[in-house]
Image 1 (tube, chains in turn cyan, brown):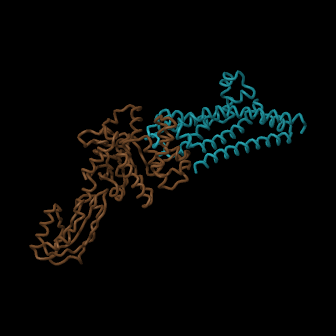
Image 2: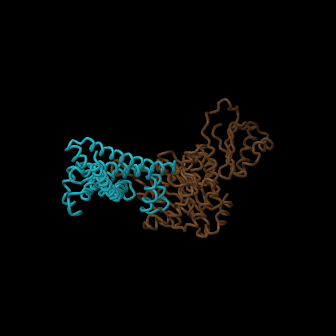
Image 3: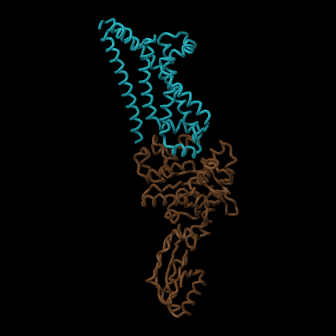
Length: 219
Length: 357
């Protein structure tokens, strides 16, 4: 591999990290409240609102069932509105975030549902406000599974970001398609794969490590 | 018994101030409480028209099989469950009329412990005990002091930094108790607190509950399916069957009086002892409560009336702080002497039951 291509790989890695990390933060910011809402508005929840729950649940399912490629194209107007352009690394963040929020919502929901309902009952019996029960009991108790879920989300974003790259987002996916696939440069293809593999491993390792640290404290 | 109870009532400083001067004041009062889950044909009635009075400073036990509605009932006190109809008064306050903020404040005055402890796994023992105080907005320094004080009370000072997963069942329940007591509640609700514990741990946890009941003047409402719990710490009892209160009163009275459900639970009817039926014998069943239980009844009968007493069954145990005994025996001798002996027992206020001749 020439030094030029190595540089291209380096730049592409930077773009992928940029897309994934900005998207991950935004997804976390939106997915956490979404997951909390999915849990507390459900029947028997802290803030029972069956209608709200149904609407949110349906939205999430719709979001999760649209294939990413189609979603990327479908939300082009939104992307232009938010970023001003539909091409480039920053523009690719919008579909990434939109696609991953419903996924993260379900991941958070699942984590929170694993918390023993008796703990919530005990907290309510102590006169805690809803806010306090959520922030002081539900989320801390679910922390290990929330961390694991976040790692899962980041890894999915890495995968999606490769796809976003293919339609002009830049990043490792873009490089792999342009050089590795279209110009039959197997070495570039392999380079991209190795970097992606390392990133996935790193995120998984970090997530598992953090999660088990929280678990060790409590078991 | 009554005197003892009253002395406890008046002797508790700040706790006793709000108690009404008549001396008989319900801390928890339920009137006509019903709870129906669901609607129409699928509805399930958990409670039917339940009325209860829990008086200041007593340990009140609600005894019932699983499915009798006990846990629904105890949750109606702090409104974890809202009754479908009826009235709930705690400390004179109409709970159903409170605003959400007032209800949260009222709940801080009602501690609760649970069968499965419900400790926060992500917090240390000290963190668990501190939780309700953080909710109540105590300053950090006072929380620290209070937590130390409580852990000393339940004998777990050395476990402050441990996590719940590192504790035994009995220790977990002690943490649960410390946490429930932290904001100085006047009432403690206990939801089958000893059901998941082995007999020895159960005894020590019950001892702790009795202790705090007496030391802190705390009123305890507990639900249980264990007769042992009623016998060892309850002053008053209500028996719940299919959502209805079928019996209510002082534990000692109910256990000593034959024909009540508690009496039957304590002394399951034994197989008719045919072999021991004596010709001309009169079968007598005596319940001995309090001072009666300390007198030599059988030998007195023998000496004064010249009758013989053939003991069939006998037991003597403690219900709370009162000794309660039960004797089943046959009297033989000249008929006048036996009649005289029975008359003597009646004079003593012992109302001998004569189930069979």
